[in-house]
Length: 580
Image (cartoon, rainbow, N blue to C red; front, side):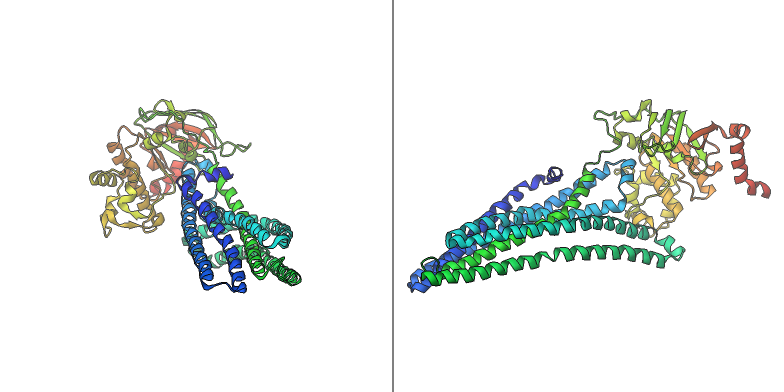
């Protein structure tokens, strides 16, 4: 796990190494200063000359300045290293998510990914910052201070060795006690973020059904759970400081009592005032370093759970691998299914698609209809490899889709999904998702074909009008037409409209379909629709039922041969027929 995380250090290796180096120099200066102070105290007691005292003072000032300088350099290097590490880590997680297929994304809820990119990365960043500075400073200060205490105080310094195991056991007990709560806390964070995300995304539905109070109660429950677990963790970790203070005061009392006793008995031969003062300083440094180590220990304990969650994303293997030498060119827009079956789960759950076999010639228009749950969307998602078939093969341009480079394949297949996603920016920015180099003339032409020009011309700033996140300042029909225009700018070999005209009126629907036929005669067009009128003039219509192809043919053929198709048509046109 740690090896995986350290791969994100990359160009910040140098500051990561500089920080411990300058921390080491800072510690050396801090450990020598009490030794010089002890010499100064003894010199004052012995009545040394002013020049001698001044020399000690100059040495102390120089060492203090050096310690400060080394500390500043170490702090800057540490900040650069930790912030850069966090930046790379966020980038690596985001890049990993971009490579996920739909199957991978099903295992990681959106709220969980957001938590890992924000809270978890911040926790790991804090831990890394402590490791490259405090975790180095603590042990060095501990060792150097003990050596100096041993030199200055002899056997009295061994009191510090008796204190350390007590503190170590206490810290281990605190961490073991807090760890289960940390794990529970992260799960609560995921659920909390999911609650907030659902509420914000569905705020219109919340208000339409007057469910504000219910949502407030649900939010409060999650919020209270986080507060309760955080309080429990803080209570456990709060034991750390009193324990450290207790050990500090015990050591000070022992050093003062025993040191004063030995100084009085030996008349300053075994130990003198300067040595006692330096021992107190070294004692505080030793216990201070132990306190800092305890903070590092607690932070690493907290960050470990975050690190595990981050590495889960980084080590997630994309369910749809990209072939190393994949084909870059798609010859044409022909599509072929050969004995294709598919299931969303690897368990023994029923297949969403079963033994699908069909051929779609390049440049033809295919309509797909069927009841909700008949796997129409699942079928077309196999074409651009959003999912891979469990058995059988899907071919585009005469080649299995698994032979293509994924980027090349998806660039040749434009898919307008049921859920229309509009991003914050301008109308022009959203349209250029189809082709970032599209000219104004190409954009205007795509908008004319998708009937976007009818409402874009009425916008205050036309194509430069700002679109809110998720396109909340546009109607459902307007968003659908913008998504179609965006797809057209790709000039795809295969254009798939997955119920992409459901929010427009029948007149606009027919107008768009006629324009598509004239504008893209060589492009294969696959239209999923609920209304038969939307696919009535298709070259072939496929009726799906229970994940299988029930029947296929032209509108006239299906009206004559399939009673289910005929019933759907009659029910949809009952009102029109009665009016006639």
